[in-house]
Length: 425
Image (tube, rainbow, N blue to C red):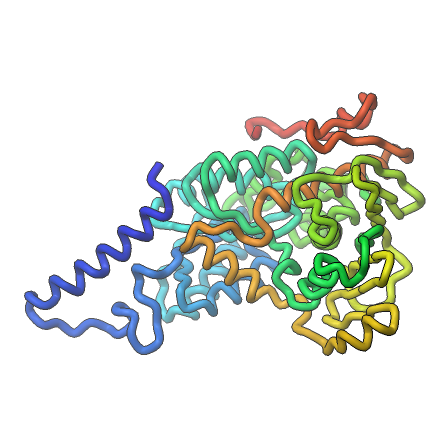
């Protein structure tokens, strides 16, 4: 497979060759946009993008991608006709044309060789499968969180991205947001002293195995229900599922620990310098999970007791001080000496512009994004372990190297889920 780096080199060569040959050609009127003038980016320098399963959250991401002058969004693939049409309208309006292609078949989309990167914003059940298929087709990936439904999916994703040399960025944008970065810097600089506890804001872990009542299945041209389900177990159609009501159902969703832990446990792993590992012990206490790393640092996943600094809060505690911050952009620090040294104003909050730019820059340079597949997989493994402990209602011990629970057959069976045929990873 030709490397993406070589592809960018060929683009630059062709652009240079085209300009050189123009000296000897008959003069023609060429639009400034085509030559990268008037503040635009030449086609040879643009990242050509498509999308899979773009709805509400994906539409927000897409709006930011479309604002980037070095992005050309050319295709949307979705199981729902109304979403295909909505995304096409959004892209065509941006570019003033009708060029965005719609696909109701993933195979046709994946076969395109002119697409550099794909925005994946399907429901959680599809994230790992879609990312693997896109990687194998030679495209880079920006995928909304959570990246996986199980420990096994997390590992398969990270291994596939590495094997195929793709750039992967999970939508855990807080790794590129200033107030969270500053909080991490306070830990790593030693200003909190020796780190002993990190806290992650999670939600109620509960999910249900129930089904919604069956409704008449719409025409395949409107909603391809079988494709929408993907690797998840079959169940009868209900419109509430496709309107975002799939959350809270075990077959489609990893529960509240994974829902927010994809962000907050990820930040705690970063703070604890544990991006290459996971806690070795998980003990449920109600909806809170008390975890311990091999080096003794404690990770607390909890849904109560926060200071009111916004959703997805985190708190880091050392033997000389603490810091807490959240999506409001505000921070609180203690003791008084730390507050005097760091008079923090409210920052941007959760705007993902910097995170998306990190991804696009890495697509061009073949660099490693902040929320790459490896660090994302590791934080998700921690979330999955915690959810397993909560479901079992007891403490479990885990080997993060082998990714196995110690002497616990019941917990080990929960590391993966069966996939509906013909899907497999």
